[in-house]
Amino acid sequence: MTTRGVLYVHSAPRALCPHVEWAVAGVLGVRAQLDWTRQPAAPNTWRSEFSWKGRAGTASELASALRGWDLLRFEVTAEPCPTAEGERYSSTPGLGIFHAVTGMHGDILVPEDRLRAALARSLNGETDLEAEVAKLLGKPWDDELESFRHAGEGAPVRWLHQVV
Image (cartoon, rainbow, N blue to C red; front, side, top):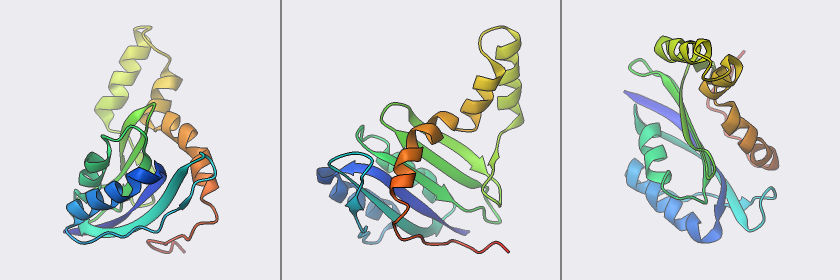
C-alpha cells in the first residue's frame, strides 16, 4: 500500500547536504534533489523540506538512513494508509531519535503498554509521571526543534491534504 509524507531537514552542514540527498534517493529509488536554504537558527547550516510518496514503512527507512549523522536535525512524517498507521520520527544531535505512531489528524497515539510502563515507573518513585508522558509525546524533541521549525516559516509549504 502507498503512503506519503514529508522529510524536514531542519539543519545540516553544507557538506552533508549531498549525502542527505543520496540517502533519500537510496530509500526512494529515484533521484532526490532537495531545495536547500540557509537555516537562520544555526549558523553555517542549511534546511530543506521534501515531500515523498512510497510504500508503508518508507518513513522508518528514511529515518534509519539519516540517523547516523550526528550534526543533522530532521523529522520524517508519514500519513496513515489502509495497511499502516501514520508515523513521525524526530532526530536531534543531543537527543537521538524519537518515533511515534500518529493518527489520521497527526495526533500522537501512545500504545497502552508504554503508558502502563510509565505509570509503573512513576508509582515506584523512579520518575515523575508528567515527565514520562512528555517523553512519550516527544516533548523534548519538539522543544529542541521548535526554533528550527520557526526559522523555516518563510519556506514553501507543501500541503499533504486539506482539512475542512
